[in-house]
Length: 248
Image (tube, rainbow, N blue to C red; front, side, top):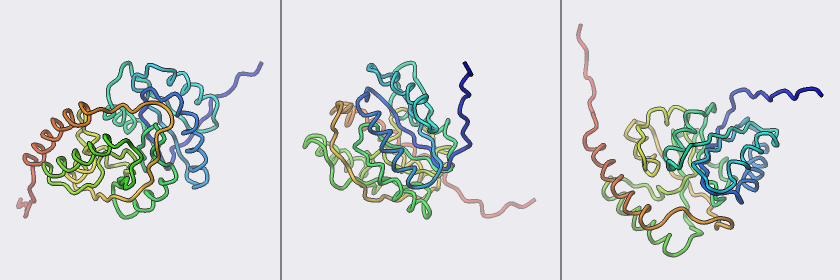
């Protein structure tokens, strides 16, 4: 029997980076939807799944996808749950695309908004999704509104929706970000601190059909508030100088 040769892919135009934590029911419909949208759009692409210590069958399903789909799929499997910032960071470092797209695996982000972000990326370095019509519970929406207001007030920001994972980065942006646990909530602020241009665009938001939300009051408010204080300190203490001249 002839041995099957391993598929080889050149560096893609786009890298889609998706953290996974117990999302077994969403993985196939999400992958099929991404395939449809991205192949229609016409750019070469890769999908990078980061399994962040899932307890369900997510990693088994993802490994099957690598063999099943005739696409450039890469699976990063963490030894344990490390959080969304770590997952995004691992994806950034493995990405080969000129443009990096981040999104959630719960199918609440709409892949059909990706072309909208890419169009705006022609003018900016980082484009952030802004979910104007949230398809979440009242408590989740209310806590997000309060958290976003506090975050903007303390960090002296004006970002409408820091919690939306659907973002498009020029490839050089993540290389300059100083990331620590929880810092994914502050991608726009961190990018601005490094001199990059940032803009928000209105995107669709869909209700969760499968699985359960991973967020609660404790990890949405208490932990993020501590991270916010760290970002405020970074903004106040960062080096900010301009050289007038150098005489030799």
